[in-house]
Image (cartoon, rainbow, N blue to C red; front, side):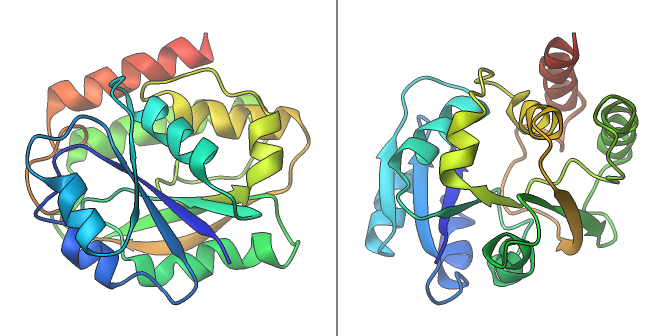
Length: 213
């Protein structure tokens, strides 16, 4: 069954809910990226495998989790309670069945969950992604699944917010079968560090623009 990589930076409020809803057989790997709110201790108490990644960056945390994983299939998802772990089988299922090599969860947002500035930025990035990679994706998909060994072979280099985009670009260039399934997107718990603020969204767009260039 899959390992589930959860990059974490000060998610003490959300982690108990997230880890309690992990499906049977799905093994959480919490990558603590410099939290100061006890996130790592909460994750340990809940039975998660905890990895420390002192180098700040979303991609750095994801990569550390990928190196720590041992399952044939790995999943990635945000740990802020905006995504429900119980939907992981929908995303991992096509990879486990050999029907796709990369599956992204397309967010279907509940009212107020996805700020307008973040939706617009996502739409622009995905439009460029479709043009370059020839995919029919509608969302960059923060919940996703892929084969661990093949993902390592892609040689992803970005260690910031460009990581999710680089993954799809390199997978498309390698001829991977890329699919998309719908998942619910909820209002996150705690303070948002990316999509909930204009500055956070701008940082993410800047990192993704660097990957596109």
